[in-house]
Image (cartoon, rainbow, N blue to C red):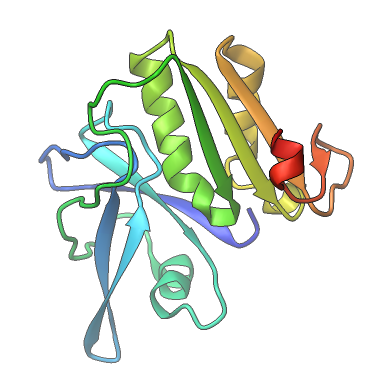
Length: 179
Protein backbone atom coordinates (compact mmCIF):
# COMPACT_ATOMS: atom_id res chain seq x y z
CA UNK A 1 0.00 0.00 0.00
CA UNK A 2 1.10 3.63 -0.05
CA UNK A 3 2.41 3.32 3.52
CA UNK A 4 3.51 -0.33 3.76
CA UNK A 5 6.03 -2.57 2.02
CA UNK A 6 7.10 -6.19 2.21
CA UNK A 7 10.78 -7.02 2.55
CA UNK A 8 12.18 -10.47 1.77
CA UNK A 9 15.06 -11.40 4.07
CA UNK A 10 17.60 -14.20 3.79
CA UNK A 11 20.20 -15.46 6.26
CA UNK A 12 23.31 -15.93 4.13
CA UNK A 13 22.29 -19.37 2.89
CA UNK A 14 20.95 -20.63 6.21
CA UNK A 15 17.41 -21.90 6.57
CA UNK A 16 14.87 -20.13 8.73
CA UNK A 17 12.89 -22.23 11.20
CA UNK A 18 9.63 -20.70 12.27
CA UNK A 19 5.93 -21.37 12.39
CA UNK A 20 3.22 -19.24 10.83
CA UNK A 21 2.34 -16.39 13.16
CA UNK A 22 5.76 -15.81 14.72
CA UNK A 23 7.73 -12.57 14.57
CA UNK A 24 11.29 -11.53 13.76
CA UNK A 25 13.19 -8.81 15.63
CA UNK A 26 15.48 -6.71 13.45
CA UNK A 27 17.97 -4.07 14.47
CA UNK A 28 18.68 -0.79 12.72
CA UNK A 29 21.54 1.55 13.55
CA UNK A 30 20.37 5.16 13.76
CA UNK A 31 22.67 7.89 15.08
CA UNK A 32 25.18 5.35 16.37
CA UNK A 33 22.67 3.31 18.36
CA UNK A 34 20.99 0.02 17.40
CA UNK A 35 17.21 0.11 17.78
CA UNK A 36 15.30 -3.19 17.75
CA UNK A 37 11.72 -3.78 16.62
CA UNK A 38 9.65 -6.93 16.17
CA UNK A 39 7.70 -7.55 12.95
CA UNK A 40 5.28 -10.36 12.25
CA UNK A 41 6.52 -12.73 9.59
CA UNK A 42 4.19 -12.43 6.61
CA UNK A 43 5.37 -15.46 4.65
CA UNK A 44 4.74 -19.16 5.11
CA UNK A 45 7.34 -21.43 6.73
CA UNK A 46 7.01 -23.69 3.67
CA UNK A 47 9.71 -21.47 2.14
CA UNK A 48 12.64 -21.79 4.57
CA UNK A 49 15.41 -20.08 2.53
CA UNK A 50 13.88 -16.63 3.14
CA UNK A 51 11.09 -14.94 5.02
CA UNK A 52 9.04 -11.80 4.55
CA UNK A 53 8.22 -9.01 6.96
CA UNK A 54 5.67 -6.37 6.08
CA UNK A 55 6.34 -2.94 7.54
CA UNK A 56 3.82 -0.11 7.82
CA UNK A 57 4.77 3.54 8.20
CA UNK A 58 3.64 4.98 11.53
CA UNK A 59 3.88 8.47 13.00
CA UNK A 60 7.07 8.54 15.03
CA UNK A 61 7.95 4.99 14.02
CA UNK A 62 11.72 5.22 14.23
CA UNK A 63 12.65 1.76 12.91
CA UNK A 64 9.64 1.19 10.65
CA UNK A 65 10.07 4.52 8.90
CA UNK A 66 13.84 3.99 8.58
CA UNK A 67 13.28 0.60 6.93
CA UNK A 68 10.76 2.06 4.48
CA UNK A 69 13.00 5.02 3.63
CA UNK A 70 16.47 3.42 3.60
CA UNK A 71 16.48 -0.39 3.29
CA UNK A 72 17.89 -1.46 -0.08
CA UNK A 73 18.55 -4.86 -1.68
CA UNK A 74 21.74 -6.44 -0.35
CA UNK A 75 21.84 -4.49 2.91
CA UNK A 76 22.55 -6.49 6.06
CA UNK A 77 20.69 -6.07 9.33
CA UNK A 78 21.14 -7.83 12.65
CA UNK A 79 18.20 -10.04 13.55
CA UNK A 80 17.18 -12.40 16.32
CA UNK A 81 15.75 -15.85 15.70
CA UNK A 82 12.00 -15.99 14.96
CA UNK A 83 10.03 -16.08 18.19
CA UNK A 84 6.56 -15.87 19.69
CA UNK A 85 3.87 -18.32 20.69
CA UNK A 86 1.03 -16.88 18.61
CA UNK A 87 0.16 -18.86 15.51
CA UNK A 88 0.20 -22.31 14.01
CA UNK A 89 2.76 -24.47 15.74
CA UNK A 90 1.76 -27.92 14.55
CA UNK A 91 -1.04 -28.61 17.02
CA UNK A 92 -4.14 -30.29 15.58
CA UNK A 93 -6.65 -27.89 14.05
CA UNK A 94 -10.42 -28.06 13.73
CA UNK A 95 -12.04 -28.41 10.30
CA UNK A 96 -12.73 -24.65 10.18
CA UNK A 97 -10.47 -21.80 11.24
CA UNK A 98 -11.50 -18.18 11.81
CA UNK A 99 -8.80 -15.54 11.39
CA UNK A 100 -9.42 -11.93 12.46
CA UNK A 101 -7.27 -8.92 11.63
CA UNK A 102 -7.35 -5.19 11.11
CA UNK A 103 -4.89 -2.88 9.39
CA UNK A 104 -1.30 -4.14 9.50
CA UNK A 105 -2.40 -6.94 11.83
CA UNK A 106 -3.11 -8.81 8.60
CA UNK A 107 0.52 -9.98 8.35
CA UNK A 108 0.52 -13.03 10.66
CA UNK A 109 -2.98 -14.03 9.47
CA UNK A 110 -1.82 -13.89 5.86
CA UNK A 111 1.16 -16.12 6.75
CA UNK A 112 -1.16 -18.58 8.51
CA UNK A 113 -3.51 -18.65 5.52
CA UNK A 114 -0.66 -19.37 3.10
CA UNK A 115 0.64 -22.13 5.33
CA UNK A 116 -2.77 -23.75 5.82
CA UNK A 117 -3.55 -23.66 2.10
CA UNK A 118 -0.18 -25.29 1.33
CA UNK A 119 -0.32 -27.99 4.00
CA UNK A 120 -3.90 -28.51 5.19
CA UNK A 121 -6.08 -28.26 2.11
CA UNK A 122 -9.08 -29.75 3.94
CA UNK A 123 -9.29 -26.90 6.50
CA UNK A 124 -11.96 -24.29 5.83
CA UNK A 125 -10.54 -20.78 6.38
CA UNK A 126 -12.74 -17.77 7.15
CA UNK A 127 -10.56 -14.68 7.04
CA UNK A 128 -12.14 -11.55 8.55
CA UNK A 129 -10.26 -8.34 7.85
CA UNK A 130 -11.00 -4.70 8.54
CA UNK A 131 -9.33 -1.71 6.89
CA UNK A 132 -10.15 1.92 6.20
CA UNK A 133 -10.32 1.65 2.41
CA UNK A 134 -9.10 -0.37 -0.56
CA UNK A 135 -5.95 1.77 -0.59
CA UNK A 136 -5.23 0.70 3.01
CA UNK A 137 -5.94 -3.00 2.44
CA UNK A 138 -2.52 -4.68 2.81
CA UNK A 139 -2.22 -7.88 0.71
CA UNK A 140 -5.41 -6.93 -1.16
CA UNK A 141 -4.51 -8.59 -4.46
CA UNK A 142 -3.16 -11.72 -2.78
CA UNK A 143 -6.16 -12.21 -0.49
CA UNK A 144 -8.67 -11.47 -3.23
CA UNK A 145 -6.91 -14.02 -5.44
CA UNK A 146 -7.06 -16.63 -2.67
CA UNK A 147 -10.77 -15.96 -2.20
CA UNK A 148 -11.38 -16.32 -5.94
CA UNK A 149 -9.16 -19.34 -6.47
CA UNK A 150 -9.40 -21.47 -3.33
CA UNK A 151 -12.62 -23.36 -2.56
CA UNK A 152 -11.93 -23.42 1.17
CA UNK A 153 -10.85 -19.78 1.63
CA UNK A 154 -13.52 -17.19 2.46
CA UNK A 155 -12.59 -13.52 2.74
CA UNK A 156 -14.93 -11.36 4.81
CA UNK A 157 -13.74 -7.80 4.21
CA UNK A 158 -14.94 -4.79 6.19
CA UNK A 159 -14.04 -1.30 4.96
CA UNK A 160 -14.96 1.82 6.91
CA UNK A 161 -14.54 4.01 3.81
CA UNK A 162 -15.10 1.73 0.80
CA UNK A 163 -14.43 3.23 -2.63
CA UNK A 164 -16.46 0.67 -4.57
CA UNK A 165 -13.55 -1.14 -6.21
CA UNK A 166 -13.69 -4.21 -3.99
CA UNK A 167 -16.64 -6.24 -2.77
CA UNK A 168 -16.83 -5.58 0.98
CA UNK A 169 -19.04 -4.89 3.95
CA UNK A 170 -19.31 -1.21 4.86
CA UNK A 171 -18.25 -0.22 8.37
CA UNK A 172 -16.55 -2.01 11.20
CA UNK A 173 -16.89 -5.62 12.20
CA UNK A 174 -18.86 -5.85 15.42
CA UNK A 175 -20.60 -8.57 17.44
CA UNK A 176 -23.90 -8.17 15.62
CA UNK A 177 -22.31 -8.49 12.18
CA UNK A 178 -20.30 -11.48 13.32
CA UNK A 179 -23.51 -13.32 14.22
